[in-house]
Length: 124
Image (cartoon, rainbow, N blue to C red; front, side, top):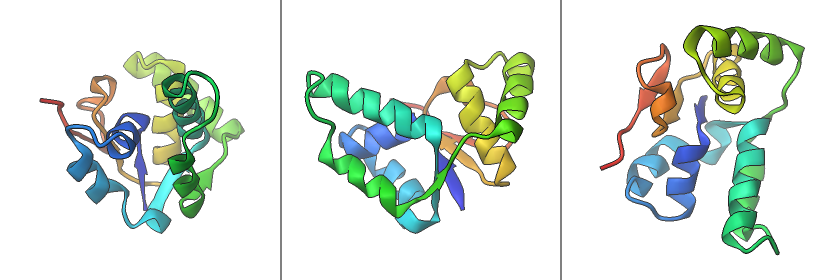
């Protein structure tokens, strides 16, 4: 199991520069954990790119993944991680979800660079 941050999901869905690398991190879908905050960020990204009208139908693939709701354990760990690593709330929640599931976090978001359990891919 693994967690993929929103940044790599966007690369995958938008066929960005890191789409091939993102695909290797995401597929097979059933072994990918999607934190609730990633759902939120992808829905927001999708609406922003569709002028706020309709979410991208490609987001339906998220239902094939394991979904992770936020709970008190994740919230408490996220608060500590945010404080310790100076992470934004959303990033801390995603990172805490990966840690709770003892799963690596794959990302191209520089906020995570160098953190334990994170595999960071730099954008060219």
